[in-house]
Image (cartoon, rainbow over all chains, first blue to last red):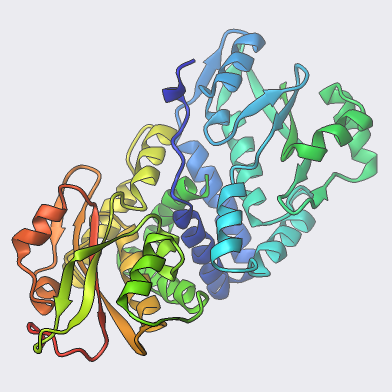
Length: 203
Length: 206
């Protein structure tokens, strides 16, 4: 696939400004309000993208790997099994590093809103940006059909730049790993240097 | 990804707070970011301009900034009190195209916020991000001293992704630089601004 199919990188200053924008918003609407904004903006973003249809699962996998699917717009997706997908590098990694270098430590509200999301929605976010990422993937997956069937997304694990990992509760993890077709050991191997491990499966 | 999501957020916020509300939001964010950047001091213009070229100043957070050292700004006595600075690429242009190729369209919110700013604040914006970083530069300039003098920032000229150009007549007059010289810079740069010592008696000053 030609390199033009990949998105150009943004100026990380825009990501820093966006992070500050969210911090300012949180002072007005609180942590719960910020969570609602993040969920809403991710849904809006995914819903502005065209729907997709694929004739077969291998065709979808090809579109993900080549960056042609909406699910691969912002991240390089690498399938590990038919159902288990990985993202090597978080799409927020660059912005976070630039923020840390130029501005300083992230404002606590980014973690606070993730804790709120983990308690109220699902336990998959290390920081605020994961609310955007997970909601975006879930909404985007719902816009894709493979061989006439809908597509379902679920997160297995998220690892942040600082090494913090969030996993679902133990009682759910085994089921997710079974659906993904990987073992706990394999998950541990992936989390050493991958940002996200997730599932795509037909409905 | 956060940058493209920002376009969706701004569309949402225009519905809730209006375009004027988004302009206020952006300006407050510019203040907030500048307040977290800390203070800087330079012995003179030479050391400041070297720091800009090497990406060491607070202004460098925006990307690569070129100090145009052949375009000094002088006061009424002919002393150098500032220089022009320019960016080859607007910070926001990659995001505009990322939004276009992620969603299949340009974000209408960008134009709405830009128009609001141009009509009611300063007719210089070529995208919504100009609202934020004009204020950001004005605020960080206060925290940077050259030879003991804090700075003032004047946004002079901008060129948008579609080729549209804007020149701030009032700011160009303030620093007493020929508008055609500034226009010529837009052939190679997308954002041109001046940094001058606060309190300098500029030839075009009021």
